[in-house]
Image (cartoon, rainbow, N blue to C red; front, side):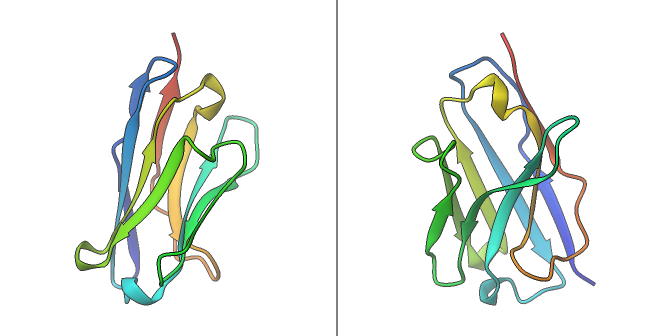
Length: 114
């Protein structure tokens, strides 16, 4: 059974950085396009960044230039490097397959506050 485990969240001041990790098990990770999503309090979940099986990436305009998605197929892991964090980036961050999502993990809380 597919399982996704996110880690690396925390609390930082505006302008700070965090690196999120998501390790997958029970799937053929390398053949899946993966994405990072986030859900802020009272808001719908939104797609933040994606990476295809071949390594092509996409980022939401509001995070472009600040966030970078990458993957390590040998470790079944997808990463989200987040720099220059802003208070509006505060949310629970999740990873999942882009189409036909697997069961969602618990997410990683990211809080940006002074």
